[in-house]
Amino acid sequence: MNNKPSSTLIFTWGNPSRGDDAIGPQIYELLLQQAHNDVDLLTDFQLQIEHAVDLENRQRILFLDASVSAAAPFEFRRLTAVKDESYSTHAVSPRSLLSVYEKVNRQSAPPAYMLSVRGYQFDLGLPLSDEANTNLNQAIHFIKQLITKNTEDWNKLTSPLSS
Image (cartoon, rainbow, N blue to C red; front, side):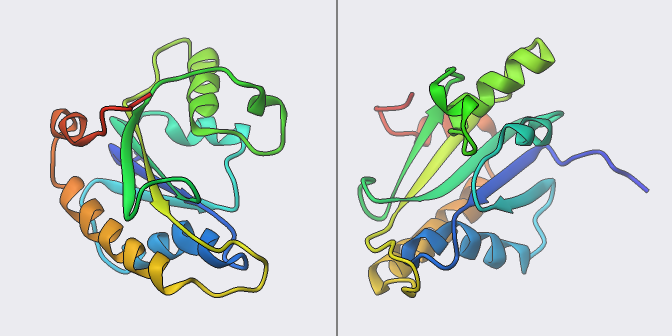
């Protein structure tokens, strides 16, 4: 049995009970239905400091979450490790998680990217909005193309506001 992690990790998060916050978990479920070479999928309600272990032995990481402020249908950007105050809370930002990884492993984090899919309504008990569903479908199409590309091509696709 081979327990070696795949080179690419797609990590989604969100609360399926909070309207468009379900974008991440729904994308996870859609991707899970299809085989993807050398890609691992992971989802949770939120990022935790313990998830730094999931980043180990990866060549690249795609974080994916719903966003109330991203341009529709989504924004794609490269991330850098930055220690922020979220590392001391119960929910960690992707950039802080990368920073934890670097501190624990004493090495640079693998290249990491954020796909922020535009959502509109996040109230408890609401279904996914029609607009968010449209954005989700465009994001799925983008991800399927993205995972066939090398990391240098991922860098070319990022927005100029990468951080």
